[in-house]
Image (cartoon, rainbow over all chains, first blue to last red; front, side, top):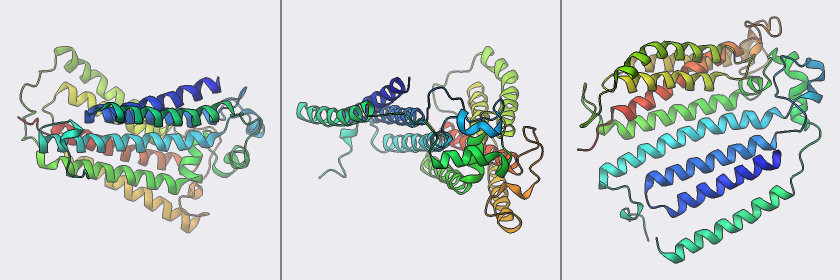
Length: 117
Length: 236
């Protein structure tokens, strides 16, 4: 199960990067980055998974045997942070994409050559 | 895109794919918790009184980290507002060619928006007991704002109210942290309030309070970002 989740996550990262690197349309690049972001989060959560254990919430587990019954809570806390920051990055990218469109009337990245050398 | 560049991207990603493949095939899941996870598993209840260990990590053990995260989110909302502020649509206008929302959406939103807001509040108030917490609850609050905006695209939320909620909850969050440093064990320590009975609503010290503040702050930040996007004028 863990291997399946890891594989899916890695595949999403590769797909997202491929989309972000090969598309010329800025919106499609942003979507590619978002897909890669989701892939990284899946990989991180999967790494914390341990077979035969349950979520780190002690409502049905006695606190005394928590150490034997729960999975690693740290990746989950990290991914929660990563998701929120990822959303912030997406919002920023979209706002900049809008400004670029206002500026050049185009969302094609090859129309923006000011920093090209 | 030119063929050689396409090929270069493909080769690079193939190399990265090989690296991932090596990681994947060589991965062996842990049999026991690692040392820091073990600490959290054994001491969360006695240290914080929270049922949800992830919430305890986010709000208390790594509280400073979360404060930084909320700050990053605030910065993002501020930059989005700044970047889009030059193209703000005039009041009661939402660009040309906007489709009027249907009767279903308007009526549905009238029923659903209060329920969504209530659900968001439920999620962040129960963050220390059940899966959920401030960030998730705040996102749900903002989804209520999305629905309200979809149902009435010319609607304008009050900027003043959103900023008031955001800054008040931010200041209170830091203040609670400082109180923790003065009367309890350190910055953002949740033991400034009694830990209460394990598993009840009013337990885990300051965690529900902090999560409520985070929920309000995150909800206000997401709403102000949405508002910035919504209020931008379509380039005619």
